[in-house]
Length: 382
Ligand SMILES: *Cc1c(COP(=O)(O)O)cnc(C)c1O
Image (cartoon, rainbow, N blue to C red; front, top):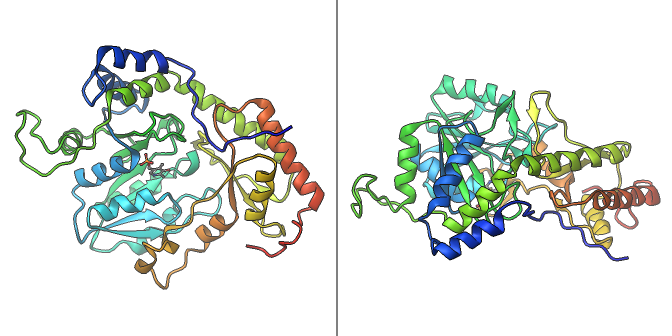
């Protein structure tokens, strides 16, 4: 029997269809309309934050956040090397320079102990990334930021609803940004959100995303802004997703627990650790291949693909990317490099059934049993 198990897929289990039809019937399909405000208000409440400002994607949310904080040419902004390219690109859009930092081995997120040694007089702030749904250890990051007068932006594109020490991600740093791309925990198709408790930051983001128009005088433009707005249709989908947020998050946590209970006994596979203070929302169920196993990650992915199972490698670190390599020609980031070579993300969407997850586990158990960890021709470690 042929099965296809996608690594990610959206689930529409709420009012998505009704709200989208309402947009069409009312003709409010562009970036004005009642769903924008409803989605923003509900999302701010969801994050326990004062302001949430919608925009057209998560990359743009980061760009708006950095612009609102005044990042300008010549500045340096610290970002983890193990992240999606958007985090570094947003810094580059501002004419600033991303300064990369290595990961901590157990969660893969940025290692706060490495921050102080890379701060210079040009450093303006730190962008942390709540990687694959597990929150960063914020307290040490905030302490260092306070000590050096730096801002902290949380790239929460992968962490809707995650908690740090019992607090929802969204208002712990100065700004948190979210993505609602189709494979994220909550989706609007394309979409993003900037969340903050600072009134002046919120006002600046609102102006910047609306072409720079004066907030109190229509068609009056005191600055060069952008058209970075979300549409009412996207917000309608987002509101429906948000109404069922607890369902989406509970599904992901249940799927992760299911994997862990079945695969925990394979010594070759290491589940990244959950810190005691973390509520992980598992954007991806990620695993890291042990150092002493003679199957390469890419070979494992191929074997899974043969069984109809999609998977994803961990992100390539930014410091080896053709666009960013020149910034750090002689530096190595050994922890991120190791994770990037050995990390794999399993199918993680809320839409997976118990039997889907069992099937993926059965296939993994089969691959490791058959080969006893040795994968046919490719016995070279990656
Ligand atoms: C998805 C993602 C983004 C960008 O979001 P888009 O909506 O695709 O622009 C930014 N940062 C991280 C860490 C992401 O995973």
